Image (cartoon, rainbow, N blue to C red; front, side, top):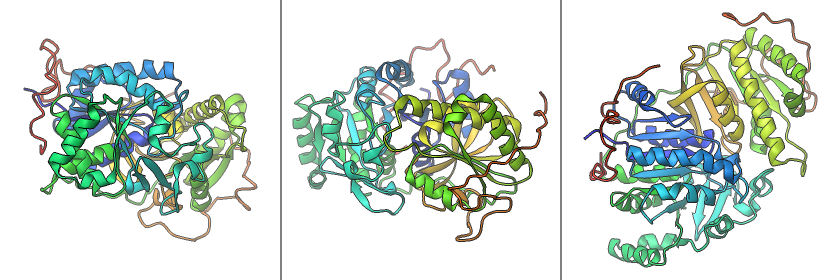
Length: 504
């Protein structure tokens, strides 16, 4: 029988999807992240690029910012695809802070749409991801405020409690998800993990007898991961299942698969110092990203007027010329949008700003040939990668916990092979943007040459750009993918029989 990927995952935004890609690749799993449901030809191309059959297949989406009706349209074909592919676990990758609401990015809606494609009634929801400062204890979620920052209950977190679109008002994830239609969730808590294997199995059987819509699993320590991974995998080999949570779902599975052995550890080549200009777009509104912008002294920094970028084509063209001139002159260039005033942000406006910012990133890439690009902001990243015309992303390296540098896969040679950093608003230390330039960034040094932001960020630069020249220059696949999918004439793959060797 053809090899079947063990795991499929859908990321509800691109930054989170690439974090899961990193978790799998660093553990030696062959994985590739697609931007849409792939066809057989794309799967074959991905397999060739990966050097062998894929262990995991991902799809990066934007469900986090969608209304329920749009989520259903987005996720229904995803569920059909992964069910037909035969994965044992389909992971709906949500944000590690679980910020969501009944009307925006509803995790409950995702479960209702995807669950019918996977027959297993056990639907684990994994709370917590310790490597990025997320801890779930007795179903209550805690999150660090930035890398190494103070840990807060998520409903008292200085950023997540006042998120402009999906503020977290409830830290008990059972109550939070009940408001999205998952009433009556079961839960396993940290003390339960100390039970013997048989006792824990009996406890789970008793909980499942109540037919809960899902079961929340605490993760508050890294050592919880292998236990959680075992609990998920033991049931996945019986029947394919849907799992929900941050990248700790993938971390838990690989911890179980590699338990008692060295596993397959990937050889990671660190990101080297760049010898060409880097473009970075900061569309996130978070205080963490703002501090990273303030610390990015090696860049020429240009503040963008978000409202004008959305509604004034002339402004967008002038800004594009300014950025292109800076990059063409060899200067690393960072464009950032100021956060909305408290109480003024809304979902529709946030979506318009993210879309305009994404289009701007694509326009920069069409104007200037670049090899390394960074994007901060989950929604901006999701839309920008699509605007670039990429069809997939593979793992390049990890820049910081939760921050992945990917390699782009695209039919356009100008976009194919880019080193692309995608960063969520809460991820990374203050020197993150400097680290995108060099593995050993200077600390506390002056601004880079050409940075005219005296008194930054209060007095952003506004220079008139020189005229810019126009940019230069004004598939089929195999009928079947050996080792990944059967030829089209073959019956659908079995979804269970390939899953008897968890150590593969």
